[in-house]
Length: 200
Image (tube, rainbow, N blue to C red; front, side, top):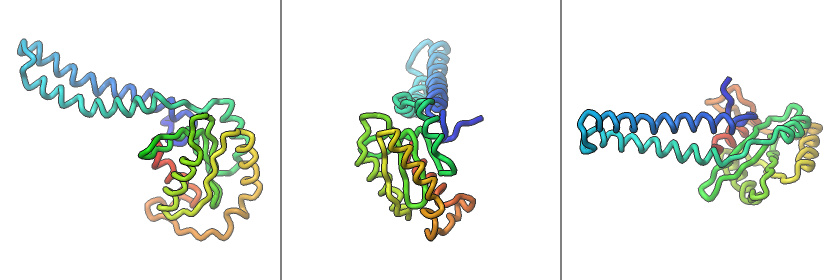
């Protein structure tokens, strides 16, 4: 079963997938190069040119692989702590939020009405930066929401519980026009979809 972006285990699955793809992409030009070397007894041939050109997509894949290898999956115990409080909230896990300036690891994000909350376990996370970045992206896509990222797991759990308890009230009277491209997705799911779109 393929692990989708935003699901538990995504980072681990992507590390394996991107490593295999990168190895395969480098293997092809190497095979071409050595085939040409054996056949012509020299490196100065069209096989070498094709092999060098083949290294370009392989190198791009290597960059993608390295970026994913640097990421840390959510701890299973932390996931269980969070999952106990999620209820019917729209959730996403193991996100690496991308921006021109930097990439930011966010362990979990919950969406409820005009509220987007997240938990980031890494001490290196620039909270004000990632909050503003997510808020700006969502605003540009027509969603005017409050974004709050927590570093303390207990505070995040408490906020999850509060959103769950007040879910109907928080989602009431919010005007929403379904997206023609994704008619089956709710407003919360579309917000989640937008956040996933800016994640590795």
